[in-house]
Length: 194
Image (cartoon, rainbow, N blue to C red):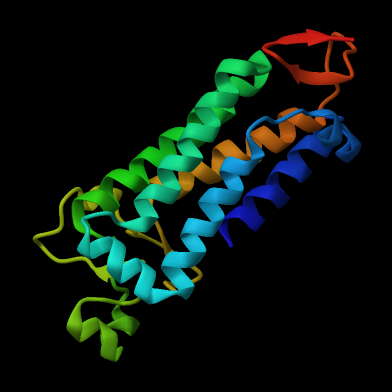
């Protein structure tokens, strides 16, 4: 849901700045397979609990791996890309790092329960699902957990989620705006070319 909201905001901002959706096709974002790998790891953790349980038993929270892969994708594109896209990629990778840090420290993303969630049966055991755990006073890095409510607490999100959303929305908006130098390929081996 965060990605969809960020993409919508980015498209709106891009249009308001005079951009065109067609310009996204000219952006040569590299290492797209890394995003596919991150999505696969995230899906394994969420939809194949045995994979997540096995990885946690080995001391590897799969959700941390997916955020680390997103960070690697962003850093690789920062070093190879268009200067004006570096800031949104840096903000997004900072968000991925925040989420990875709190999940690595706690095994799952700690969540502050809104009052209406307290009666949920999973809340009593601490583990909400494959990705989330109830935040307790013993949680490490609690300020990086899911502490912000949205829609009356129906959705909780973290500071890292905010940075990811801002970075993604800004990246979409920046890539929608025509390249000031008039270059067709915006990202080509670290330099612009015609």
